[in-house]
Amino acid sequence: MKQDPSVNLYDIQDFGEYGGVNPSIADSATFTFIENNSMIDTFHGEAEGCFLYSRHWNPSTKYLSNAIAKIEGTKAAWVTASGMGAITAVFLQICNSGDHIIACRTIYGGSYAFLKNYVTKFNISVSFVDITNLEEVKNAIQKNTKLIYTETMNNPLLEISDIPSLSKISRGNNIKLVVDNTFTPMIFSPYELGADIVVYSLTKFLNGTNDTVGGAICADEDFINSLIDVNDGTAMLLGSTMDSLRANSVLKNLHTLHIRMKQHSKNAKYLSEKLVEIGIDARYAGLKTHPQHELMNKMMRKEFGYGGMIIINVNTFENASRLMEEMQNEKVGYLAVSLGYFKTLFSCPSTSTSSEVKDEDKEKMGLTDGLVRFSVGLDNDIELTFKRIAKCLKEIKLI
Ligand code: PLP
Image (cartoon, rainbow, N blue to C red; front, side, top):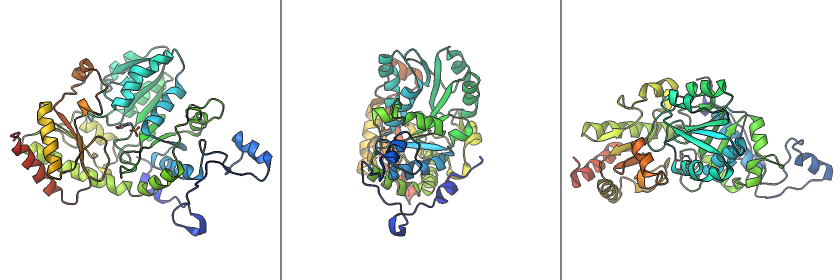
């Protein structure tokens, strides 16, 4: 690992008006010019430091984009109104009618639904593959394949993608490798590992306070400029830009990300080990039993740990429902979708965040109704949290 994302972030010095330690919020949709010619130059992207209209750039979205690019090690980034706003813009920017995409079969349900049901409108075809099987990925390549899409740690099964090997395959075939790193910011740096474009749902760990949806696209300057080209840029024309007030609030949260990731990881490791000790079937990337544990060791930045996500298998939907209801009553956390919040969240992915996946595909992936996904919070007393979970498991006779 070459760069340290937290140091890169720390070293940014963006002062606000009157010397404020936080950059001022640019609460304007449009910007004035003294001379009309400067407006025309700005319109053509030829005036450095000038802003035209906030769907394109706004000083506040620019501050946030720059900070995320620093974390990711890319030359540029662009922030969006949601994670899906980022992901869909990238697909539609790269692919034309008649093109082909290779996608990991186990990805966030919304991304899966977009690829399975939506891009067909544009005559774009998609092959879903087991991304941990590199031969399957290679065999799926066609003459018209434009991109390979995966999640570094995938949702919800927590499989790890081998980014350096996928990058070799994609570069060898002139294909773009697009990686969603939502589950593992700072832990993995997919761009450094060989991805061409990295996307995020900022809604999750990056923001961390569950008060907004948001997204980001990190890439080289050419790609970001093409996305926001006023004539044919997908992001510019479909308009999924983030609002300046939100950009400012997310930026402040970003500066505690390194501490939060360490605590999420520490707590999740403790819980997963304790759950296994009492006989629960738990999957966590930090456990030696995780199928890609060694791969993760090779790709990760050790100091941030193995992330905050755990899944457990309690066999039936009924068990999962009762367990989650009990855990909410016992103040373990909330029965809610999403992740990366300071409190623990739990949900049943098969019937919620991955409900878009067809039953036969779920079976192939091992996405069963008895799975409970935990996004482990920042609890100071994680031993107490474990005792509460154990009490709930006993209550419904699972231990
Ligand atoms: N990517 C991953 C891995 C996700 O888990 C999610 C949402 O759960 C998204 C993308 C979509 O993000 P958003 O809800 O911000 O649009």
